[in-house]
Image (cartoon, rainbow over all chains, first blue to last red; front, side, top):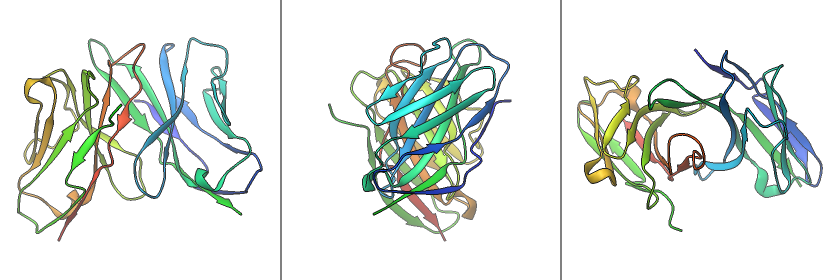
Length: 117
Length: 116
């Protein structure tokens, strides 16, 4: 079974600074996807960034970037120039093909990030 | 482009009553998912549809939960009868396809269910 572990239940950062959220996962598969989702207090889950396991290059989306270490099964999210609007719960998620047309997204428990002014 | 729509946003019912949630995915998205998110946890997949067929319902409590996706577009999730432990946010998500390009899932605003 796949597990996704986010070891930091809560984090805080000052506005304009950089913060890194950690995520590790457990799988024996070689082909899979990894995602970071953001869930602000309004509850809507928003996709932040995605990484394909076969790609060595780390994904980036504006101020958000990942450090994907496949051998270590680590997938951390770096947020640069933090803004007050980045305050949210951040979920790391893992998806693999389970055979046939079955693909399942498994979420970690989340990290609550607070950006302080 | 319009996002995933869900209704109602909030629902309060007593235990043993029934409730239904509705979801309209992003236009053209073939894959639709229902998740249950209990407070303080990540979402847990309940059921996945590919067009109007069920792909995975292994974690759906079938004695009380049911879901359908008529004509491969809108979907409804029903709970009958509800239990206290069903109190959660029910999230609907859709993706263009289940794998490859377009695998990203886009979520609706969710329905917060409180069972008293």
